[in-house]
Amino acid sequence: MSAEALLREVEDRLKKQLAELEAEYAQKMDEARRSNENEISRLKEDAEKQAKHLSEKEKTKILGSARLQAKRIVAEAKQMYVERGVEWMVKTLQKYSTSQEYKKLLGKMFEYAKKRLGRDLSVRCRPQDKSVFEKLGASISSADLDSVGGAVFTSSDGSLELDLRFEELIRLRGEELRSAIMGLAESNS
Image 1: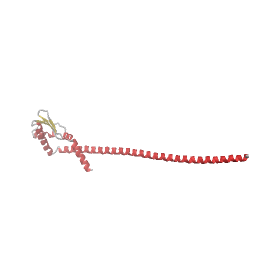
Image 2: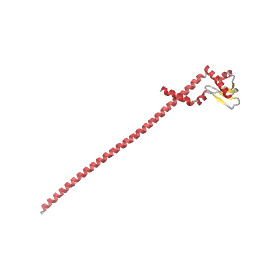
Image 3: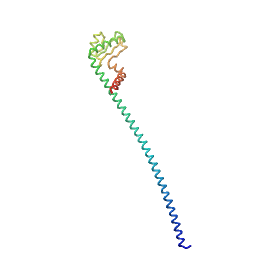
């Protein structure tokens, strides 16, 4: 074989091998591109899932916080309503303590106290109520009671005391009064 033929044969083999290498390279590039596309798609899906999960988590956190704040605001509003209701009640009792009905109530308190503590009891009252108790025949221990209304009765031996001041009655019945005021608030809303 001549050198020229040998050279052509080597060239043809090289071209053939080069074509095979190019085909193999193209195939590997396609596989790598598909693999990259699949990996990108998978990463994108994972990122979307994670973003959705994080957004749901943040949404839940924000909604929970908002609900908690709303409950706190409602509770504060209710508390303020109750406090205003109690204040209104005290003002109403202050006005009531200047009426004729109030004087009758003091008489009933005195009779109730006598039944509970005995006939020989003493009374601590407001200065403006002193004359009412004197007319009832009560023994007045002091007339300097600072109160919206009512009186404090003490047994003759000083061992028992019956506090019928309006403030004390409100304190003793505080939960019932607050519940009643809340009931009014809820029925008005």
